Length: 113
Length: 158
Figure (tube, rainbow over the protein chains, first blue to last red):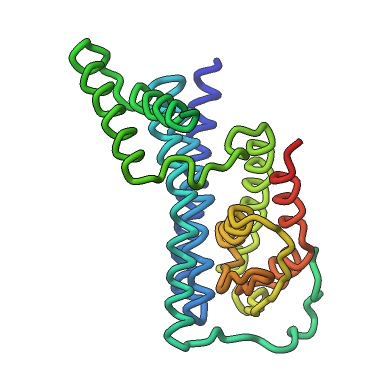
């Protein structure tokens, strides 16, 4: 019983993780400029990796391999933003300023916080 | 000396967690590597230089939990934007003031901003951060200063 639940839970994590990876890829292609594409890559760096590793952790259970998976996640979450920031800085240094939209499109509520 | 011991313990734990083969010879090799790395770090004068007491605080897991939740929310927003870019995309450059004092806190802030999809730190100066925001909602979230308050709470240990 517990095993079935865990199996499906891990399957759900792996599948949603994969789906977010695909969405990140779609964003990477569709977003207009370099800086917005960084955000799309951010999806694959964070939630996609997070869900896939959580899914694998459930599969592995309490074992030595889970320590390795957690370490992978830890290092990924520390290095990914560093790489993104380095890319953004490089683009700034190269003097390609980000495209900025001026006023919001009518019909869309401007604040969603 | 305190830093040397804690570094050695951390390395030993790491080795034990990764190795998985517990035989006398490997223990010997592991112990030797730990001692070697500690000796090298001491020679390089890097032990305790960037020591951050927050690492051992109970507040860190709470901050991480909050950050993961923020990451999940931001991911959903950016994923939606990937599907309907015309409706959601509002790329903008946001400048937010930074009132955090220590360099570690500032770097934590800049890294947390970049880690959250929808915002990327472009520039970290002593008193402000310039960030690129993809969506209106992520820009507003950043401007609200919630994340900075959390980091201030994280740093402000009793």
